[in-house]
Length: 363
Image (cartoon, rainbow, N blue to C red; front, side, top):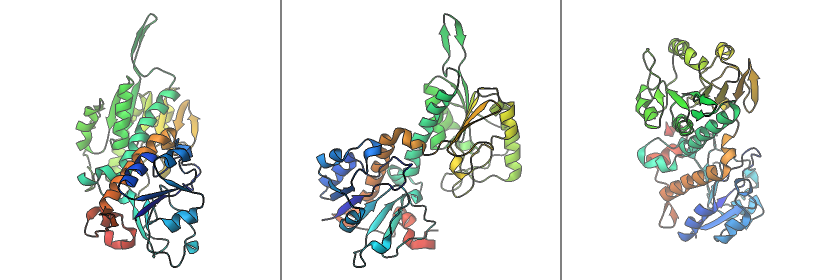
């Protein structure tokens, strides 16, 4: 009987879990054994009893979990001493968000990296980057509202009319679009910008006004991600963006380029020219940040402007972050499990893209 095991995250700063009781229950109904490491879901709001109630077996030792499971799940790169895994162990499949740079730690086993899932229609339900980015964009909006010393919506009160907050969201990927939508729901006046002119309709569909700058747009790559801009174009873009940055109550930046340092969008000079009390939420902090000032993981004040570069922002809603990640995993498992057996079809674009054991053949 096929078995799936959920490892407890070794990253003390990440509260998520890769398999929730909901998904565990679905797998068990498909005649799959499910094991989880003790207390793996506590920080996400899922108790051991929640798992036991749906038929999951709780294991205290990681070694036992690895030994019993055919497929092992995690979110972060694994902190496992593979030398301790039995030399006689049958081939196992590790699934997660590994960032191993295509180097597998033990060639006896297969490693499927969910962050490498291609952006194609049938892979949308497996796309962990999009599901987590959506949560990041939502939460960034709430952080902005909490930091800003103003109302977001326009209010008509006995003391007069309060003007709505002016928000600029840079980057109209999944995180940016969710930030625009959330700020709009909160009643703010929202402008969205992206180097991909093709995102204009998407920005407007979630309640934002698309900022159309007068320069030649360099659109997305084949995967739909923004291309890295030339120095000349980026300089011109920043010059034109400056007045919008400086006139905004809050700037939320989400601009990222896969495998590259985040482009610098908000300069020190921009910050000096912003009104005191303004806010910058920089979601690209892990790859250097879109804002020149501020440290990843910290909240700092420069020239009266609050700069927040949140770390592990998905922790703030860890239950739902885990829920959607787990559903992404379930969709991926449905692809590789056929008739109660593992079937890694290397001709399948999704499996081929995620299989780190294939090395350069993925390119």
